[in-house]
Structure formats: structure tokens, C-alpha cells
Image (cartoon, rainbow, N blue to C red):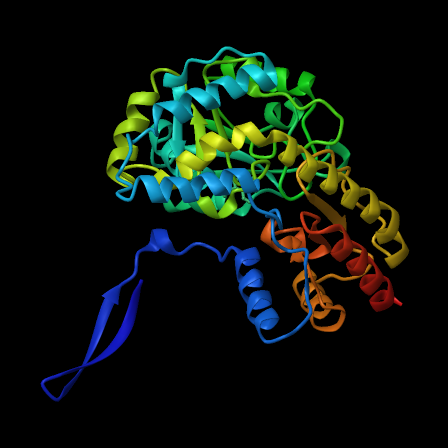
Amino acid sequence: MASIVPHILKGRLLIMALKLSERSDIPVFRVLDIMRVVNERTACGEDIIHMEAGQPSVGAPPEALAYATDIIKNMPCLGYTEALGIPLLRDRIALWYKESYGIDLDYNRIAVTVGASGGFLLSFLSVFEHGDKIALATPGYPPYGSILRTLGMEPVHIETTAETDYQPTIEHLENLEEKIEGLIITSPSNPTGTIISPEEIQKIVAWCDENDVRLISDELYHGITYGDPVETVLRHTDNAIIVNSFSKYFAMTGWRLGWLVLPEDVTPRVKCLAESLFVSPPTLAQHVAYKVFDHTDVLDSYVARYKNNLDILKRELPKAGFNKLSDTKGAFYLYADVNHLTNDSETFCRRMLDEAKVACTPGVDFDKKRGNGTIRISFAGATDSIEEACRRLQDWMK
Ligand SMILES: Cc1ncc(COP(=O)(O)O)c(C=O)c1O
């Protein structure tokens, strides 16, 4: 594809046909577009409630932030770090696996990355080839498919429904019509907040190992769960790649820091890729992340707030006609089936924004085929704004 660019050279009009790459022709990530519009309108004085964004409305614990100020004062030249991150932080992440799951993990298997997003790029590049087929659940996190496509890999969509909590099962895998090289799972899930049970996780891991399928387990929402056990794939295999981040439980979204737990033979590949693609993850963010582990009491209080928000929404949303909600067990999302209210979720969300002043994300962002009948509601915000959103939606739906 080429873009036609008019250009004046020495007084003469030239029409140039400059190439745009096919690989960059990927769909818009709608939620970021919506956030931009909502931010612009909020800056102009509109009172809009953010339920579109998948990010905590509070930041990292204040003590961790104060530490950032100390670092800036004492280390004015914040240089690069090792490509896989500072050893102190990698070691602290390894300890977190011991504290959270009782798993001993060698810190050499950990790579600190530029958000989980940077982690996807490194992991897909390190274990998949051009043309490889990678299965993933739909509805699902939109960038998986976009990153795979831009790297020349082929996403294979597993259409899930509320019957399996929008999660892939062994039956789905056994019924796949094509041979896959990889599988991405997300538990708890964005956009549905549903989880894969520990028993099913174990079966999926075994299936992947038996079928030479590289499992990528996105465990970004671990820590944000509401009672049911959520299992790390790491307990069952050393062949999978675990993706995690400081963006969600640790409430450090804008610091752009994540990590991977890698099979031993993959680590050197990721190291070389990281050196050339990123040089190193952000240095200041790494120091703050090291400190944030000391303040899990604050982070757990955020999780208690999300749980309270979820309870309010489950009680109040049905009164506004949103009565088909996902069985959210983690993360901060409800996925609402609104087929009885609209057949165009984008227009529905736009009207909700214009008329009720509540921003949500249309399901088409997560499921191109069936997402016109669903919306995603994020409840990561403050509880009083969640209550106000319920009042507005009840009035609007009257
Ligand atoms: C499931 C999932 N994976 C990855 C990401 C990206 O995370 P990060 O901010 O660490 O790049 C998100 C962000 O919302 C997400 O929901």
C-alpha cells in the first residue's frame, strides 16, 4: 500500500507515492481512543465517569513514590540497567513467587520488560516464527492479535461463551481444526474478569506439553481476585512463558514495567532481543518497583475497594437493565451481554457517554464478530463514582 503525498520541490508540484507497510495495518485499540476523547471532554469541564479504562484510579503506594524522589536526588544520572533488569528487582520478583505461591524460582529466569506489552513482543519473537498459528480466546485482550499479526504470525480465535466463563477449555483445544504452535491464556481475563480453575489450568498445561504447543500465560491480574483460587501455570510446567506486570495489582500503570518468567533456554534469546529492541527497561521505574513489594497492605486495600465496587455493580446494574453479567472472579471488569438492548455496541456506548456521561468500552474492541452485543465495564475507579455511575445509568435507561 502507498500513501499519495503532494510535495513542492523548487516550485514544482510532485506527487509522491510513499509506501506504508502492510504489517502496520492493524485495528485501532478502541479503549485508548475512548480514553483520549473522555480526557479531552473532561478537560473542557464535562463531568464524565471513567468506566472505560483498565487502570487503577489510584497510584503506587505513597512510600514507594517518596522513594522515587530520593532516587532522583541521589542518582541524578539514571543510566541504563542490564537488559533483563536490575538483579535486585529480578531477585525480589522471584521472592514474590515464593511468598504468593510457595514456588522457588531462579531469578535468572526473570526478564524485566517495558510493561507486559514489551514482554509480549519479546516472548512472541523468541519462540514463534513468521506464519506460526497461535490460539487465543475471544473475547480477549485486543493487542494479542494485533501484535501477532504485525509480526507475521496468525491468531487462531477460539470463540468462547458465558457457558465456559469465556475461557478456553480442553474441549476447545481438542476440537481445533488447525495445528497451533502456541496458546495464549488470560486468567483472570480482560475483558470478562473470569478465571480458569486450577484443575483446568493443569489440564491445559498437560495438553500443551503433549502437543508441543508453547503456552503463554498472561497472569497480569493475579493479586486482584475475589476469593476463588487463581493458579499460576508456573506450578505445572517450566516450558511456558509467564507474563506479568506492575500495571494492575501494583497500580503502576504509567511506569511501564512488567516481567516475564522464561524457560531456561529462552532467556538468552530474550536477553539479546531486549538489548537490541529496548536496551533496558526504565531505570527509575525499576527502583520504585523494588520498593512497592514492601507495601502490599496498601495494594490489598485497593483490591478490597475493587471488590466493594463489584458488589455495588452486581446489585445496581440489573436495575438499569444490565442483567446478563460475566461471573467476575478477578481483575476489575464486568462484561455485560446487551443483546437485548442494542445490536450496535459502539453507538450504544457513544450515546451512554453523550447522554448519561458514563464511559464504557464497546465489546467490538474484544470480539469483532459478536462484540456488537456486549460492553465492558471497568470498576477500577473510586467507589463514590461507581455509585454515581449506577444512578446515572438507572436514570438513562428509564
Ligand atoms: C490482559 C492484559 N495484558 C496486558 C496488558 C498490558 O499491560 P502493560 O500495562 O503491563 O503493558 C493489559 C492492559 O490492560 C491487559 O489487560
